[in-house]
Length: 71
Image (tube, rainbow, N blue to C red; front, side, top):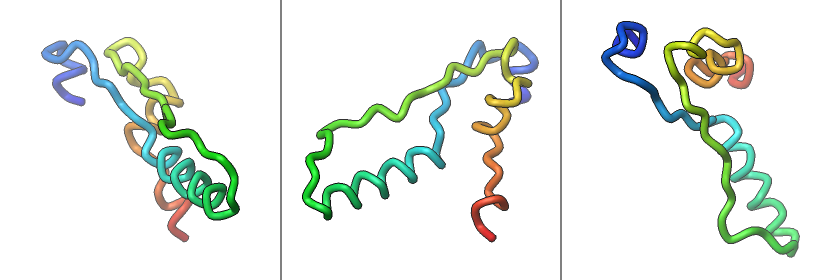
């Protein structure tokens, strides 16, 4: 993050680990229920740049609120 702020790195490609976990569990539940599931599931990515790194949605990806889910 320091290198991104300093301009040494132009961007970071970031995934959403919480959504990936959620989607994985829900897909397995559907599979176990006998429902058809996609062979490949795109969980998305976000390009983080110096310009958007302070956006709330980007901050949540960079620093997931784990305490919210690990109570």
